[in-house]
Length: 73
Image 1 (cartoon, rainbow, N blue to C red):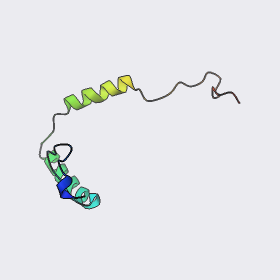
Image 2 (image 1 turned 30 degrees about the vertical axis):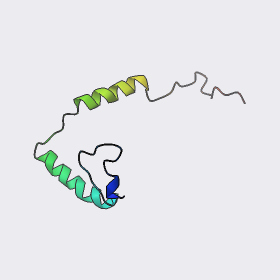
Image 3 (image 1 turned 90 degrees about the vertical axis):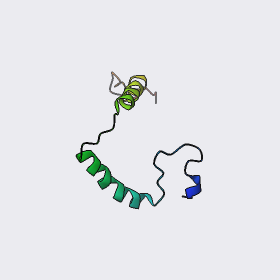
Image 4 (image 1 turned 90 degrees about the horizontal axis):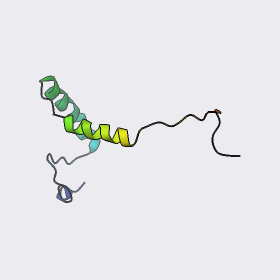
């Protein structure tokens, strides 16, 4: 990725440029250390949004009563 593209369309709070495999290899242990040290993000608003999506767009499907597909063959 071209570093000049970071923040071009959307502001980046933490601009990270690099090969995703290498970045994640370093980022995951760093985040785990922060978490283990007691640093926790307040995700209340995020989970409220996710729960709203789950209510609006529930996962799953209705099982046909006959056990067959509703399509006629």
